[in-house]
Length: 234
Length: 340
Image (tube, rainbow over all chains, first blue to last red; front, top):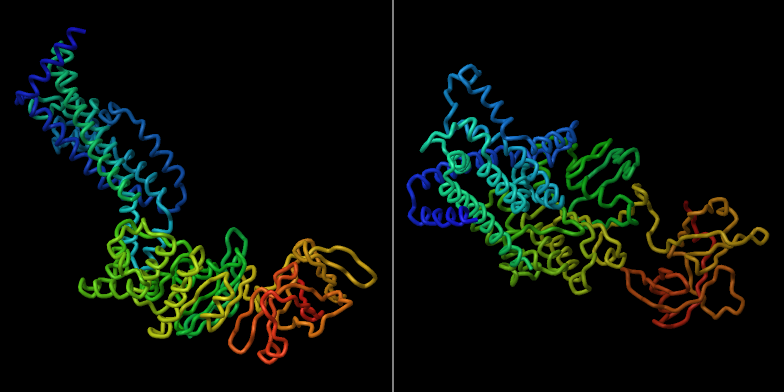
């Protein structure tokens, strides 16, 4: 118990002192996770919208596959991407391995199914009359899609937040594809794993607190906007 | 000619919900579309609004066959607008809702502002321009939806039950708006409604749909009919479980379990003198409503069933029925028609 208490106390001191190593790790984490969330959202939201709004042969199979991919372990993605970007892989010449780009690629693959699935759920809940009204008022299909996405914005926002939460907390991809290089590909989770291996709990706990604070802050921000709009609508 | 259908059919899972062999709709007129629930009114409006495609057959719009490709559909949809029975307003203020159709058409900001103010004034919602659309009452929401449709100055306005679930004051406002835009902008209007009194008030023509087909049978005076007893050649039936009526011999074969009987309101007559021994198809009840329908007078009599009848003005002046007065009416055999 003393160990944990001492670690928390020292972690606070590190955070208050704005330790440069800690800040670098946090910055790399936010940059990599933020970028992968944006890329996955740009792909996953339109895909989710299209799947939700189209009726095609095999739609059920696609939905089942997407739901299955939600449970995909990060180490499996790490292994698959590694096989493509390692020196012997087909993308080997691009020299992506052990770079932030490699982590981003892996994380994008991890969360596209999550963003798409939650977007499908959010868009499917939107009243079909929005689509019909937009079309009868002369909207193109793209303008109609924008109307539906705007109406489903909270559900889609929740999908993006969930995706960000998933990537900022994952360790397998960052470790396998990033290599945990200090100041370069060391993220909060890989640093915590390393510090734990070394028996240095102070930095690990400080990073854990920061990680939780970020997750809490992002969720609070989302709920604040969502709640304010809902109260306005009452 | 505005619309013309050629052997137009719409089927859902092998069930034909619409079957219009030859329907012609003229431009610049107000058409009322009436029919029971499931008669195909909404399906027809969706097809006329180019939001749905017929399963077979053709639809002509201004003498031109509709090709269901994206570019032509967009062009056609920008000339016709449908206001739903339960219109949905987009999240945001009223003015943003009204602006939508103008914005997607690329209308300039100054023109958009002018038209938003104009249509909101027309529907009497100018004071709600900044209000949150989702906070409006049902009637106000319908008026905003109408304003949103009118802002784009459509050639054709299709309204699905524009006055359903709306209080009497808002009903009057909506009907007046429809009459005004038809008169002033020459907008062709097709409205689906259940209210026959409103049809008489606004419509130039009435289209009746029955099981997806055009019918010339008035929707009023239709009753559920149940076989009761037979006495010689006379078959007695119950109408809506309240009133018994003898069915003419030649129509008796048509009586099935779910038959309906239609009483032609133009053939029902008020008995001039009090009848001591009532004819089998003479009913007695109280006058509950009297209204003028162009050159005719319409009476509603509560006689176990709500019976509508139509009198010429001369007949009305002679009989002088009054609200609340007890009257006997005779239903001649030729006024009855049975359908399954």
